[in-house]
Image 1: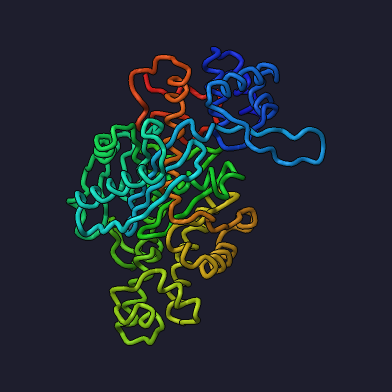
Image 2 (image 1 turned 30 degrees about the vertical axis):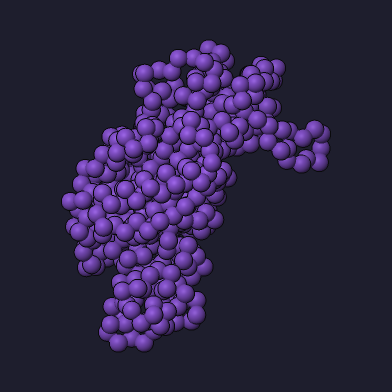
Length: 449
Ligand SMILES: [Zn+2]
């Protein structure tokens, strides 16, 4: 992108030395495996100046040289990365069924991970207490020093106010009062005495995709998550698009059938009410209750309350026609909604994640492809690649840790260089332009005034 490169050059050349160093540090943290030569090209600074800045960052134990990628011609460029032991992050994802915890280094390598059942019906206080216990155990098991932990990124599947660090609501039966206006970020900060951020789990999953999955190769992509609900995250020019009020991505609440079932949002026939894991499981159970013979019953041990998305997927793989049909129907609904998005945004790449796609990637991908081809305009549907995320269930926690590492970078730099840190620590991605966009070298200082 020439316009970006030009802006970078100007910003980097005019910056004060520490701003330049920080800009270089952010570029190295962007996970693009930049070499010194790449950094010179990206910033327009002279190779000699880059060499000197990198030498200083290495001397302060912030940066290290990664193993070189083999090259057939000339000298191998040495990729740079943030030193693995420069700092560590906690990543937490409080999901509807499972909560995941990771301890990761600044580059997003997972040192330790764990998961527990969330057991939402137990109520918020017990859920949060159990997650705390899991985090404390994960810190101990990871053997990283407590002082090296820079912060915690927390992902939650409710309606999130990222700036204020609040869970506004969790639209699950019986949980409305439990999770209404909960200052979850502050609750975590109080427990761990660390800066924390709170973010929507679809966005943290998409962030993991951006840095560690298929999103690495593309600055523009759409991420679709289907689990208990359905959500989307949109990356444009390498940056997460949040929308005017921070609520962009409510893909699950587009109407696909006006006479469809009532949705948690109060409307009828939202995509989420027809194609989420909960909807698929419900469709399977209702059919069996009405007398349809299905392998699902046997795989659930005869107990219809134990039908899960994994059980439905397994039955479909074993040739069960009911399981196959309910999954195909879910894929059809998602594809109808997506065809409109493909027409609107003309994305190069759509990545699918979440429990539904982990359970039945191939069964869903094929009908999705076919229906989008049928329904979207030819040009747009030819441009788009559809891929199922290569990341596992820990993606939400990993992405949260990764977001927190971007927020922590300035503080880490100032602490390491022995400069006084500014008054506050950025605690929400909205405070920090670097958070979702670590590759923005000349960006405004990510520390709030
Ligand atoms: Zn809805």
